[in-house]
Structure formats: structure tokens, C-alpha cells
Image 1 (cartoon, rainbow, N blue to C red):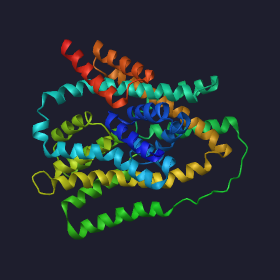
Image 2: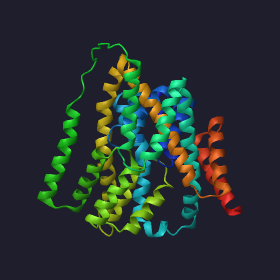
Image 3: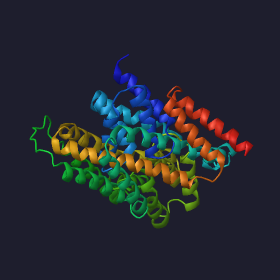
Image 4: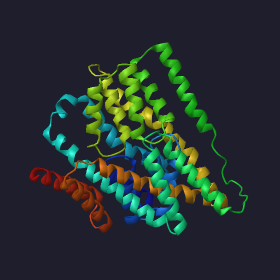
Length: 392
């Protein structure tokens, strides 16, 4: 069995093991794809995390799709995206179709309390593993700590804080290190037509809706806009969805929206799969409800995935250029710091009881141990959390 096939199998394992937001997903990627299987090294992962934190779209989906691109080229990248996102899309579509039944299951309520500490443990692991790889010198630690404290103050204020801090760290290292300018001829030209494709799909979608007035097409257009306009992933897009779909278009009630988002935390895979739930519920009671789920999910993913095909060849060409190497160093240190910041803030946000903190620590230490396959580990952690919950 060749490497791309092995890789796609491991992507499927990642899709079944990744709970929480992008930072928790990075912990799974680091555990399975870097430390266990060594498809890429930690430095490459940290660079990709930094780069796709600056690009609109679902950052963890873009990161793992980019890894697929590096492993086997454009087609493996495409299958990587499908294998990573499709299970969550299917599960959230089914949740949308059978929401009234699923939302009443006691097991879901219990899992929603157990999963946050496990996700924080994965975030902590991602921050720890990236930090030990990229933060090497005293000067690196100074920048790391500065980004941590500045981020603590400004990240809650604006969704632009994360890309601003990443760019600022990169420019700072560029200013301090003053690398020699090295000219490098691109082995491949940037595929500018891909940006044209993103714009063309947006224009065609809007024109078709004006002509046909189809409800499902309106949904697709709304989620496609989120896909090309949101930087920062699933956590950032939620307020936009509430403002657009709940307040302005009244396609779904706020109670149903928030209930579905809570359930999404119990579903492994990308948080953007929540779009499938919203799409299904928005067309609830119509024969096209299931189709709405898939169209909205694809709509929100398509722009970000296309951008992977645009960004990765550019990144591969310029990452060895002197000034870019220095800038990427700053970006990766900032990315590691911000992931550690997320672990810190999410730990503070946990319910104050001993079971939550024990689960965070146990998850982190077990990931460092590297002896248990991640899907089995997640099942064991959930089971242990439910046992702790019953005792407490």
C-alpha cells in the first residue's frame, strides 16, 4: 500500500478523532500525521497553520488539505478534503433531519459536558508540541510571551486580532534579522485563475437566485459568502450566521441554531460542518431538506479549499527564500503562542470542578505517551469522562 493511500486512511482517523475547534484539530494532526506517521515535520505543520490562519476559510480543513497536497498532489488534496469533511457533513445533516429526537437524548447532554476538557487537552498538546519545535532561543521566547499577553488583551475584541498578530510577528522578525534578499525563480506561476473561479461562482450564484428565486440557492449563496469572507474558522463564522440567518433572513430560530451548535461540539470533524445542520433546518419540512444540508456545507467549504490550491504552490516556492524563511519563523512562533493562549483561555472557561481539570491533564499526558491510537483514545476519554461525571 503506497503512502498516499496510507495517508488518506490516517486522514479518516483524524476526521473521527477531531473534536472542538481548529486548535484542537491541530493537536490531532500533530499526534497522528507528525509524531506517529511522520508524513511531515512539526515545522511544516506550524508554517501551514500560520499561513492558513491568514487566509479566508476553514483553517484546519485548509491545513489538512494542504498536507494532502504535499503528500500526493492536487488529487490527493481533493480526496483529503472529502475524507476529512464528509463524515461530519453527513452526521450534521442527519442531526438536522432528526433534530427533535436527537436533542432529547440524555447521552448527548452528557457528552456536551465531557467533550470540552478533552478538546482543551488536544489544544494544549498542539501548543506544547509546536512550541518546543519552533521556540528555541531567548529572543523567540520573548516574542512568544509578548504575543501571548497582547493576544490575551485584544483577541476577544476583534476577529482581525489573530491575523494582525501573525503578520506583526513575521514583520518584526524580518526587521530584526534583516535577511539578505535572495532572488528565486518560481518553478510554477501562481494560479490566478483560481481567484477568478471563486469570484465567478459568487456572481453566478447571485444572478441565478435573482432569476429563479430558489430557497436552496439563497442558502448556498449565503454560506458561500461566509466561506470566502471569514478568517479564523468556525468560531468566527457563528456570529455572522446569527446576524444573517436568524436576525435578518429569519430562516432558523435562535434556540434551534444554538442547540445545533452545541450538538456540533459532539461531532468530530471541522466546525464548518455546522452549516449542514443550519441548511437542513432552514428547509425543514420540505423534500429538499437533506439537499440543503449538503449544499450549504459545500458552499462554505468550496472557497477555502480552492484557496489551498492557490496558496500551497506559492508557499512551496517562496518558503526557502531568505526573507520569507525569516518571516515564516515569526509567524510560526506567533501561531504557537496563540494556540497556547487558546488552551489557557479555554481552560479558564471550563466548569470549575476537579473532573474537568483531570480530563485536560489526562488527555494531554496520554497524547504525549503516543501509545494509544487516537480514535480509541477519544472513545476511552469520553467513557472516562462520563464515569467521572456520574461519580461527581
